[in-house]
Structures are given as structure tokens and as C-alpha cells.
Amino acid sequence: MASKNSRSFFRIDVMLPCSYHIISAEDAKNNPLPLQADSGYIEKYFMENLNELDEQIHTIISQIGQKSALLSTALTALNSKLNFLLQTVDKKQLVHAIPQQMVNISAGGVAIKVHEPVKESDKVDLLIQPLEDEPPVLVRCSIIKIIPDKDIATASTIALEYDNLSEDDRRKLVYFIQGKEIEMANQQRQ
Image (tube, rainbow, N blue to C red):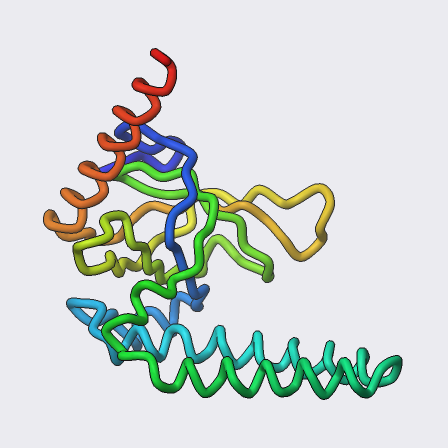
């Protein structure tokens, strides 16, 4: 197990399909993670993010509507079309919709940038897709360190340590990291 001050294993900065939810320690205790990230759980994860995004889109379209009714109508139609397409997506394909995010990852933990307030006592549920043809990794994490962003008051980078990561999921992470190490070594040779 990694210490509170550093993570074990090789660490790498990489873009990776990654979604997170910050929860209080009490909520974490009362709501254990499922053993696997099935499509229903993934849908629940993303519907929350999609609803927030939808609200932002509606707000922006309303602001655009004050300047150009025609552009606002066109954007509303495009948004409706996208909503329809999202509703027809096979739930098993939702895993491919995990947003890409820059992470500093190892087999013992991960560091990610977040844009909401966070406390060291909070927990973070992490959904990551290191290997394209494998099920995603769903793991609860403890916050080890919070580094406030100098430019954005509500943003910070949080260093996380995996809680109870299964050996199969650790294998996926190690395999992914080793593949990226080989990729980087090959790039340096060229």
C-alpha cells in the first residue's frame, strides 16, 4: 500500500477516459460501490454530468437568443438532435463516452484536476477506462493531498490513493502504464 506522502509504482501523465464524483466520507460509508461498473451504474454516473451540461447549454443558448433568434433556434434544434441520439445509445456503449482527462496515474493512485470544492475527508469515486477492450475500473479513493489552482479559485489538483482496488483492476492499470512506457521509449528512440 502506498504511503500518505507518495505513490508506489511508475507514474505517468496521460490523457485517459476518466470521470469522478466527490462524496462525503459519510455518504461513502452509507453507499458502497458495486462490485462492477455495470451499464446501469455508468448511466447513473453520466446522467448527472449530462444534466449539468444540458443546463449550461440552455443558459448559453438563452444568452445567444438575446443577440440572434435565428442562431438560438438553430442551436436549440442541434441540442434536441443530440439529446435524441444520446437516448438511443446502447447503454453498453456508454463506457466509450467517458470524457478524456489529463491524469497522473500509477497502479497505487492517481492525481486529477477537479473544479469543485473538496476536503481531505471526502472520498472520490473514480471511473476510468485504461484498456479499450476491457470493462472500466470503478474504484473509491481517499484524498491524500489537495493542491489549490493558482488561477481558478474553485479548481484544485487532488492526489488520490485507491481504496481496495481489485487485483484484476490493478493488472489493467499496470498493463496500461507499461504500454505507455513502451510507447514513450519508442518515441524517444525516433
